[in-house]
Amino acid sequence: MSDTPNAPLCAAELKTEAQREAFARTQKRRRNEWKRYWKAGIKAFEAGDYEKAQLLFSDAVREARRFGETDPRFAACLNNLAMTFDMLGETAQAEAVYRRAIEADAKALEIGYGGFVTSLTNLAQMLADDDRIGEAVKLYDRAIAFLEALHGHDTLHIAPLLSEMARMCDQDGDYAQAESALRRALAIRERAHGSDDLSVAVTLNNLAVSCELRGKYEEAQALLERALAIFERQLGEQHPKVAEALKNLGVLHDRQGHRLQAETCFARARTILEAQVKEAR
Image (cartoon, rainbow, N blue to C red; front, side, top):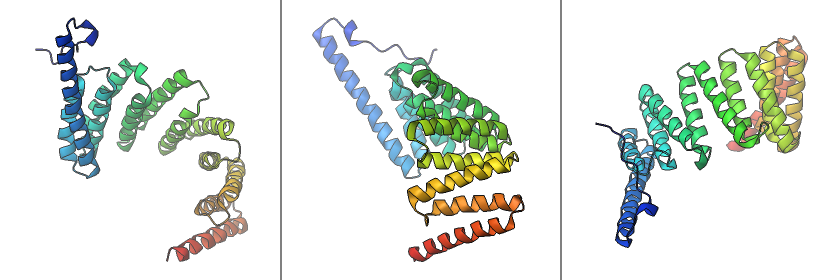
């Protein structure tokens, strides 16, 4: 016995008014059932009741499948069900369901990229948490390639994915690939936002860390100094982001044996953070 439902009827195939009215009533009932399970599943998930959410999202998947496996509701329900399995620690089932969601979205790319990319990156995050970083990076590559095909090689959509992939590569010790991804993310953000944007400063900071890990201390220092200057201009000299950049710069100076410069950076970072603590009291 096949578990694949019959293909849903199309209203255009119905000949009589009575048939069309019956079809409309059936579709409305199905939408209501799907929506009821979907909303209840989200409510249970947000409340931390993952076992209940898993049952509800399973029901939502069943109802959404009646609309056809290329309907965006089907992949969305699968994605939420996979997230629930992941929260329950059932990673093998989560992976299987994520892959089903990816396949469903891949069959229906005309509905948009959001669900497809979300499923890919959610599965990648889960695999990375399980130390399967090589597989996770391949999924990010697939998501990036899809967005490039949809929006162009330099689309801003891929910058966050490049940054996250770089973080995974750093974690896996592949500093060269991390540096390459961050350089590309930096170039994309500079073209989109200009050279003085906060997203550029964050990327500069992350790229500096990758360069430092590869022993490129002079370049890392230049990147950190540039990031620090942007944070100061955009956020003010007493902002926690400025303190973070100062600490990173201090560590870099220390590793190069520049003790005086390192202590100057650390002292200024401490002053900023102490002032923040006092304000919070």
